[in-house]
Image (tube, rainbow, N blue to C red; front, top):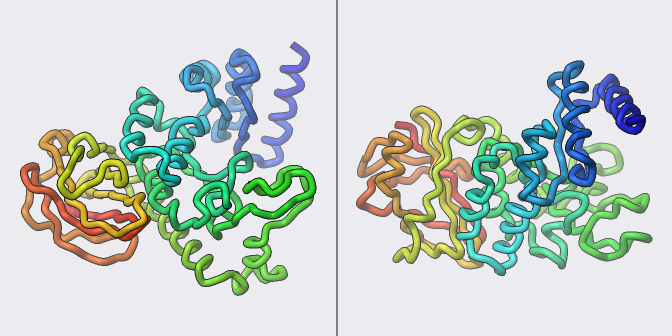
Length: 328
């Protein structure tokens, strides 16, 4: 059809300008046959180009990935909705396991996020109010798999999105309909100096955390290309583990192991994590009474046990997380 040809020309035009990827709005409203036809043609000339689709019907995921040739799909109705509900106290942390398992092996091709232009800001009155409350969700979303993670402009500064814009209104979102600017970005920009000297200490702390976590998720091989093992099935009704408020999993690459645990609760907790025998077999982990582990989020060291018959104990701050690294 003529429209298909025009759309191909548009994609090739922008690819020639140096655009390295396309985020295709509501791609599932376009016949998958179009994407099946156009994506290979564009990638033939620009093989490194990324195609990311907004598809909200899980029953169509495989269709748009395999037939439609998309590289990644937005994980909105799955992980985003789940983590938001847990952060707000509406759902159990157990739901994270059900969420990734429901993807049936497609999780590596899902794009994770906690904010985008359609959704309400984490720090808005409509979500968590305090951006620090989403730290556990942030760690899970960016560290639990090898798939990409996206942040939205101002998220790393705790942008509230609570301005009353002309068309968009006070809805917890940053307007995409008005000529507008964000308070957090204006302060960080500082009149064109881009030195961040006008942001608050709280914003600077949050920005530093995002920098650290995103660097870890990119540079730590266990996160960027390692194995994943969900520990939740072995930690139901634990004597020092609340499966509704805490979530824990392992990532491993060669001789490097990461024990990641997050606390969605508003109080600090002491946790005891069970490591099942299957985890040692599946990940080929040695069993040892006392390993020196380094929390990559604080650089503090602690001694932990890695045994199938003895729980691994550690502490977590309110809305906190740990990424404990052990090298065998």
